[in-house]
Length: 318
Image (cartoon, rainbow, N blue to C red; front, side):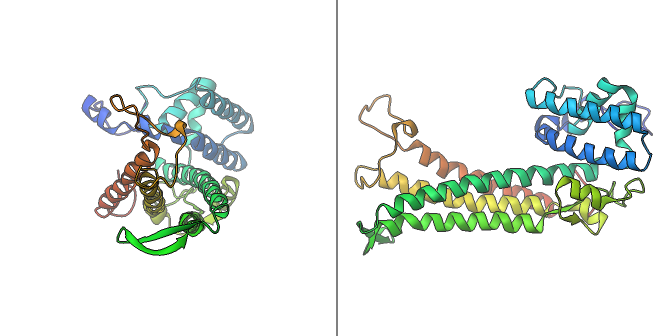
């Protein structure tokens, strides 16, 4: 299902359909799509763009879809172009042609960026919470090691004697800076783009501030062209995650060294290590090695996005 077609007399080529289809990776935005559609529906009903009986019917269908998406009962099909068309298909299946009225006054251009922002807000807050728990664990371990002497290293050579408590606690300070960057990101990227339409706004959305408040944003973006163009928030989120990845990688690197026979400073749980098929004495710090390796993906993704963005003109592009 596509949401366009107006002037076209010929169906799109199958090769174009396959190239254009994004539903297999933007489906993760589905819960946020429902959330935005519910706020938009309330706005349309308040302006009598959609009648009260129809709005009640559509709202019930949206809530039912939300539950079915959560349980896995409803999902996309190969005929859906993207998350937007999949959700609209579900609405039409549940409440008939009136389900398509949810499209009134909005564009996929402002819808997708709103979905994406809500997705990142939720996930970055979840990451911040997990990182905070890790920092607490590190601090607890560090507190138990006060007074334990260890060699400090520069250039990987013995340098000065230090407390191992200080050596371990250094990582929590880096992680707390990562949490700070997440909240800095939230402060800069908490305005709603919804109501920007394709690029020039929408006369159907009389009160975008109310919709923004319903969705948990602190305000509305001031320029509609900028709002649908903006992917700074995505690039900045990737930088924040890249920096976190670098810190986790450095922790992983030290744990690989510290768990080696030459150091024997730490011993990782059996649950987070692996062995060898030919050397039974081995206890490999795979979890630390994988953290170190996977951190490179964040940096690669950030670089890829920046290279894409630098060549795009303003307003919506693919």
